[in-house]
Length: 144
Image (cartoon, rainbow, N blue to C red; front, side, top):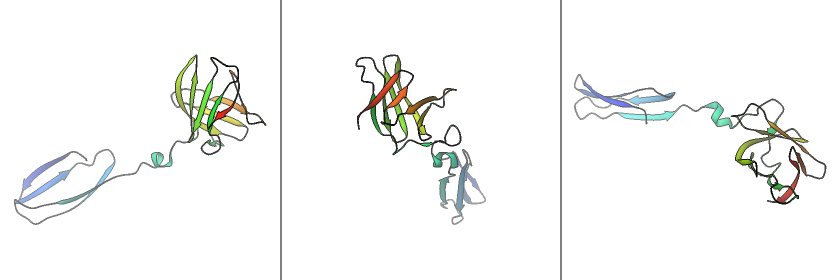
């Protein structure tokens, strides 16, 4: 709810509503007098960027959501990289990597992992057999 204050003037109790944070406020006046009521309808102004969801870091990329899903890891055993793809996000886990959730984008034979806090994206190649080449070696799907 936006900040508000109450003013009394000309025998009418008026509610003054500040327009802050891009909110739009519509109001209707009540009956004059100290017990007057005002009906205030408050609705936030929608942010078009937030409604659209995350935007690709560059043109030509589409979300991985529904295209690449599941847990991928190396067959090398201990200490390998694991990436879990879920709903357009990827969680990277590994011995030299703290668990990190990033946005996942694709361009057909490439996966682009994008962290808005970092300058460079991590690009991975999708092989014909469905495995993925990473800078740490090949990973294969191990589960949903």
